[in-house]
Amino acid sequence: MAHVPSQPYVSLEDFWAAEETSDMRHEWLDGVVYDMSRESVEHGRLVGAIMGELGIALKGKCAVYASCVMLYVAETKFCTYADGSVVCGSPATYRVAKLEEALTNPALLVEVLSDSTEKYDRGEKFAHYMRIPSLQEYVLVSQHERRIEVYGRPQHGRWIHEMAEAGESLTLHGCVINVDAVYA
Image (tube, rainbow, N blue to C red):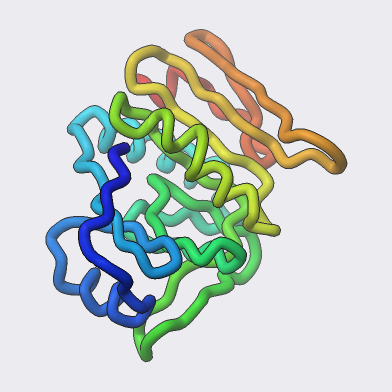
């Protein structure tokens, strides 16, 4: 993702007000606003598929949120949209305006990788996500091959990386997800 600021310092309140009327999505990082890449049709299909599988698997246990729900990482002053979010228990939110709020306690986040965002999703964006205390799993879905990766928060030390490809399954938040079901 090309991270080119679209304008000078913007308060969080002004950012949220502008997002309400914008036809494009943006990220906010401590006063700087960045344009987000547009999504391909395949990207949207994969987001729908993985979130649908999670919604079925986690029904009654956790709430599954679409990419239109904003996230706020308080420690790094970062507002963004993940492709999908899962919250177990009551959602915690950060309120800026009367009706505007962003999730602050996801247990699982999903990003579908594209050529323009893969480096960012694996690097800088993941670095922000790692600062969310509630986050237990970060899921990366490939657009180019049947491959899903999951980074799990360890008890001590480094994040644990697992990967599943065509014909395999992996466990996300205690539920088995079949890779081929996501790509069907």
